[in-house]
Length: 407
Image 1: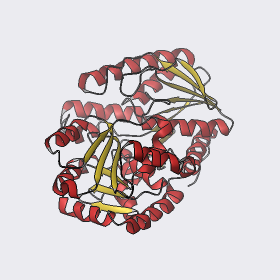
Image 2 (image 1 turned 135 degrees about the vertical axis):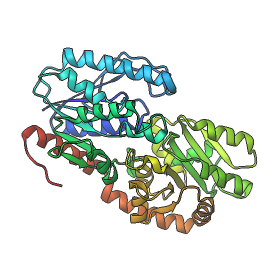
Image 3 (image 1 turned 90 degrees about the vertical axis):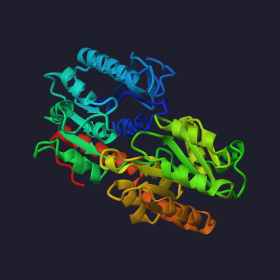
Image 4 (image 1 turned 45 degrees about the vertical axis):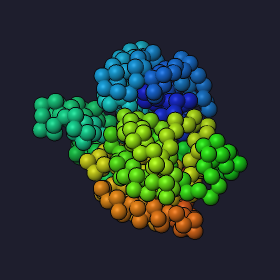
């Protein structure tokens, strides 16, 4: 089977969507398929550029020229549009003989562009939803859900999914939100993401080395927020708790970037007694050791974004046997997974007192170990990379063969 995968970012870039796509691509190659990737030459942060052609684990990676101005405002829109144009031109010219095209959602509506470029070709089309548009624009407040622009984008979303052989969501809450854009006969499935690093790949010495280089003292409780500090996440409760505890509390480490990193930077500058540490993104080959170096992981989600995104921070932490403190409402996958597993603590929005109680509980090494073990056991059942990539591969193979693959 000849498969085309399309996403703006792909390894060695640090973007999580690209890392998960590569895991699927490797699985498909191992199952005997010919896999081609179309992505951007520009990096997630806009600061780097990758080789135009590369073979990664048997995957044919072709990186297209596109702008890379960065992740803010109009610059991001320009980057998106340039990638849309590059994908349309490339697929139109070179995607003859494709049996199946799979698009992610970076940039938004790239699946619609791929479908238009394929035209009358007989290729099947699948969409792997990482975030749901235009709903996230309303959640952010960029568009009014009753406005003309929003209604127009809703029509575009329905048009993008029309005729798709498969639409894949990340969890049951997202599946329910996606369903309203699909025709009754459309195939809609959900498969959770997984931790991109396995415990077996993490060297305890490397984790200890990361603690040392970050000046985390032996035995010190470190709470780590790792990854994107994006518009759908909550940071205020973590910062308020850090300010409340001051130098009496644990170390609060924030590693990564995103449109809301400035809030952490401003807080740290204004509260020198709070034990807040800012760290850069970590290269993919070191992510496992970086994550394992922390004692507890911080995950959050704004209630307006429930069902629109599913933070992959939780899967990564659970896979490595680290408990999670989740801040947000409870009608989302992350909160439900923490509650179902017992692998952490769930704290409501604006509940700083509840967060302080969770932090006090997490300060006990025995309690951390107990909840971490529960988290790891849950990850083995639900977030296993080989199991979940194989499930997606079976679904993709089934739609090309015209079969229905049961759960």
